[in-house]
Length: 322
Image (cartoon, rainbow, N blue to C red):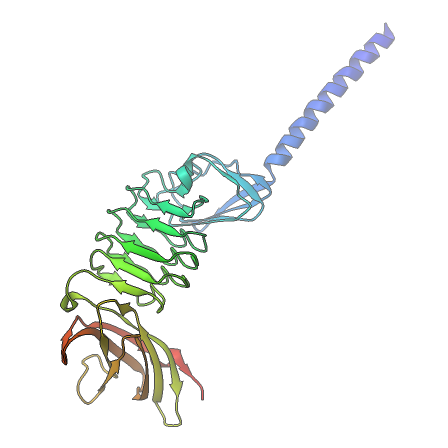
């Protein structure tokens, strides 16, 4: 009788220990991935699957999924309506329904936060109106088709997509942010179906050629200051510039001034060849540099000009010491 009671007690202790061990192991496994939210930034770190529910946290503006996290749950951030940026480590191999066909969007599905698919040829869903910062950055993308209702392409959205060779920008696009297509070294052809109202001068690298709708009279480019080289004379510089080349342009007129009004006394005019590059020498610029540029097309010896675009720079921010 005593031996049977001992065996019963030992069995109960063993069972309790086994259950505690399983519970401990489960809690430890779940605790391997930690989610912290601070100042609108949600950071997911550790090793394993994310299990915390942050799908409707209204404070989250940015998400960082660190290396070691292997999967995200369904609709992980679907209700985070203020979410504008998401960074996902390569260790993440599985993402729930929040990323249908590889597109991560908030619940309304109009903003593309990140593409995590593996396809080289991508057709962006028709409901997308904004592509946010770094959405496709450094991907193996070769071809992309934009929806006709797209309005904005964010900063660095397609930066460093080295296999991308051409893009067609829909008429609906109004904004293309800084470096949206920077370092796309094989991007040679850009076709605009309309005329965006707000394009950063640094949206594209100087290697691309742009096709715009309409005649040269309605077309424009934008000039970019690459470098100012100081001379031995005080406040006198040699400037290196380039502009995004237009397919229909035979050349460009560049004006550089020390005032916004571009008066005759403060302005120098330079001819820029079809390649869009120019070194402008002996620029007297005390503090600020103002420039404007317009394309032209030749008919015989007569020039037909396009629209002016304007930019300004802080001289000292670009100057090199001699």
